[in-house]
Amino acid sequence: YQITRGSLPSIGMSVNGSGVVVSDLALGSLQIGTQTTVGQFCQAIIANNAGWQVGDQLTFFLGRQTVNPVTNIPRATLTPNRVVMDLIDETPLWNVCGQEGFTSVQGAGGYFLGMNAVLLAGAAAWVHSREAGQGQLKVSTQFFYVENAALASYQTSAALVTSANSYGGINTGGAYLQPGVANGTSQRGGNTASGNDNVNENQSGGGSSNQNENQNQNGGNGGSQTGGDPSTGSGQGDNPPAGDGSGDEG
Image (cartoon, rainbow, N blue to C red; front, side, top):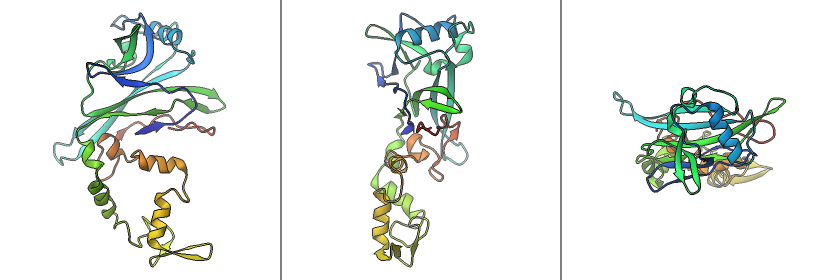
């Protein structure tokens, strides 16, 4: 369920004794309320967490699982809320972003940034991003925390086989699953290998990048991450920040 990979320190997440998802972003003594301003919130983030600076952006992504009332097809709607670090902004914080991911939660030694309720049938993650000049974007490496009863049904061996069969099966000569395969064989540097060997090579990462391999293993399919449309494997909503040429990716 990885959504970003980059060079900024990751924001840790855990579930407290009440079942609420909480980040490791310390707020000190700040208790966020209706009168809390963006400036007060940003001062707490920068003062209590190393590596944060003015101009940085904190984004909270919340995925909601729904079911279409007509088709009964599950969908995942992704909603981002962001705050840019500005120490003098007097705008009320909750006028800029929702309370879902911008609530102070009591922890050891003070308050921490967390959700305002128990996460049900959805996914959540905080992302730290920074414009680095010359069109570059730095991001923190983050994974979704997923709480969804429907998820398990998409992760079984039977579900994987069903998905593969919907594209013509695993051990066929279909070009979709086996690029370069013709009539069950594949030519590699003058040598002939069976089509099945070619599938194994693709599955183990041969001829592909580690990024693609990791996405396949950690469920890059949106349907398995947050219960998206199983027929398309995609969800609705905005994408995480785009990556730059230095390796930070969304």
